[in-house]
Length: 468
Figure: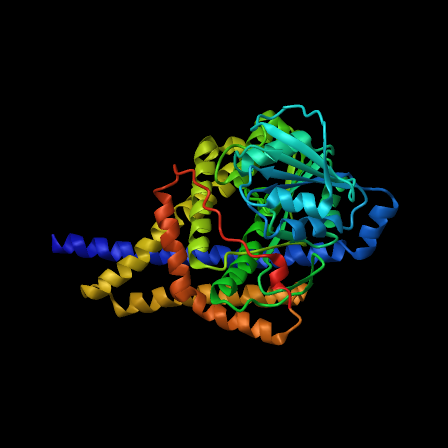
């Protein structure tokens, strides 16, 4: 009996160690792939090409959808920044999803809204529209006031209301770089198969915002925000850029993504889920593979959307809990794709990765941390395993974070201050001690709450308050 227990404990330790080795090796491999892809992309895409697109009228008009629920702190700054985007023809559609604060009143005050009678075809179902407004100052600004139905419902309403063949989703607490739309939308011009484009998301916290524009990128002051900056840099560099090469990109951030309107309507718009962004992308893959229609879903590392990240622990944990529940819900809804050769790279590689690493990863990682503690308390922890576990789980993970920060700054030079870069590097040494375990624990809990539909809206701060 004791021998069987010993073998089980040894096997468990080897399994946990092998898991961390495989995950970190995958992240490292992705960094090298991403580096090659980004270098190639930077050589191909230059400012002159963007200007040529404008001069030759090689663009497609875009509708920007902004779902807003109780966003009185950020909505005015967000809309102002959108109005300054460098793009030939676009409209902004703000969908007030039954806000109970002064979101609608602030829009009326700052943009001189007047009510109009606009017929709307209900191609995709959503909650009833109360009123539709246009701005006397901005002819391309439309504000829709509707009954509360959640973010997916608000986006479906925006799809019905909007005019143009492409639409872009952006959160009400986010700011796009001036040329972000132009850089992202060029893929739809260059390749008719493209149905969706995702881009990089970065933390706005700590940076200087003036006139609705990010004029200086700075590292935040609060530890909880700095750790999220590191996560965003590492996540986009070690994940989405690499999956783009296999046409297996399963996530386009809900904070900024561009879609072909007809393609989204074909799959019935957004499904009511707490992970509506990933769910839509997975269903697009599924639909176009099943119908045999050639398509591409692209990740572009060039344009940037700046978004507020949670600045308090309660809001952060709510956000991560919702993200994980949304991930599991999306995977379960399209479960027939799992390891199904019919779906090619998506079914055989992309989908299993998100199941085993992203969805089930917190269970394995939490068990590993808990097991190490228990083995130590009961005297079952060998010195060799403890050393290897520390090097692989903590040391290797820290090197990946530090490498991502250095690589990102080398490629894009977003931080003008050496002090900020050093600050991020130092904090990356401590991210794996405490913060990572806290996030893993919340995701572990969320694994058993995937059926729970509550949104868990984080606190917002005024964008203007982030200015220096």
